[in-house]
Amino acid sequence: MFRAGGGFSYEARARPVRTDRLTYLYRTYGPAIYARCRLLLADPSAAEDATQETFLRVHRHLDRVPSAREGLYWIYRVATNYCLNHLRDQRARPEPRGDLPEPAPSSTPRGAPW
Image (cartoon, rainbow, N blue to C red):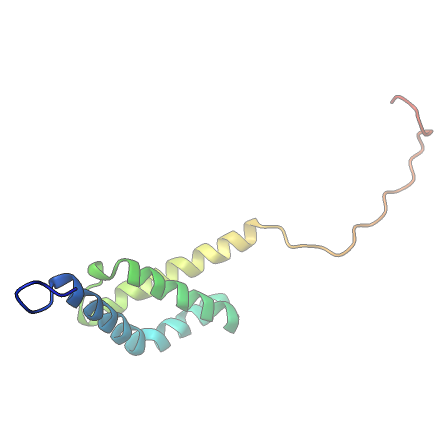
């Protein structure tokens, strides 16, 4: 956004700084976060999804991410919580089964009210 009187406003400069920081965090910590997700989920595809979701959450709360080494710990915790919730939700959701077996023949005559 260009201001009257010359120069750019703070809003125009804020987005690239956020993007640069997110890019830095992803390039620096992405492999460690992916390794953590893969360890917890034991599925490379699910680990990729979890890593992506972790960094989406980091982007949403980029202003809360601590700097330096503490940033890794914070992002690591976000990834761990996401993976543990994913595993919990998977256990709660019944796994789809193949065809259900046919019901056993009943000893009750057809049309009986009981």
